[in-house]
Image (cartoon, rainbow, N blue to C red; front, side, top):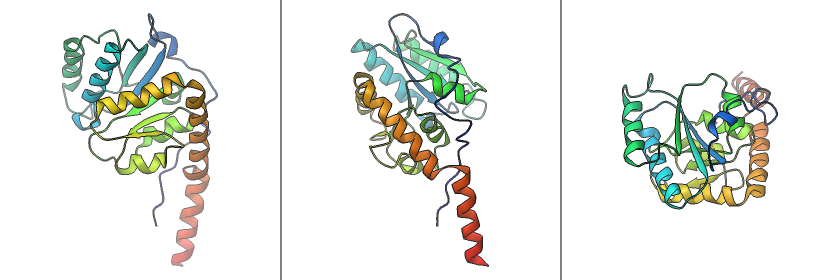
Length: 212
């Protein structure tokens, strides 16, 4: 039996401040797409840069925000990513924030979370946290991340490593804001039902009872 990690659904909620939103918005960009995680190649930040370049070619008003640093990833990788952003000429489309402590505030400041990992995740905690905040998610279709999303009712899955498909999913959310909102609310209910601490405790208690 698999017992999934639990999410603090009373902390990660759709209700509360959006402390970073105003500082991230600029110019004509008004739809914020975030990626959260340590900076390391397999997490897919380079793919996100390609997505930003494609979005710029289409003149989509998207702002991309990379939240995380390389202290637990690949040392010096943040400098490589910023150099790539300059090479792709997307410096105005993407923000590297470093690590931020107020993760519920981060999630609420986003319009969507993208998780483009190139290798399978064992779980995908930040995906569940964004879903708990009723934010739609765009997720590489493999590993534990796929299990967190569950189905297309709760998020959009795309083939790992496919920047074009990733942008297509983000575009779908951008041009259909009402459906994006409904998807986020469905995602919140999924987390409450399947990844809450009360569910976690109940399933562990049932497991121990079965072994007694």
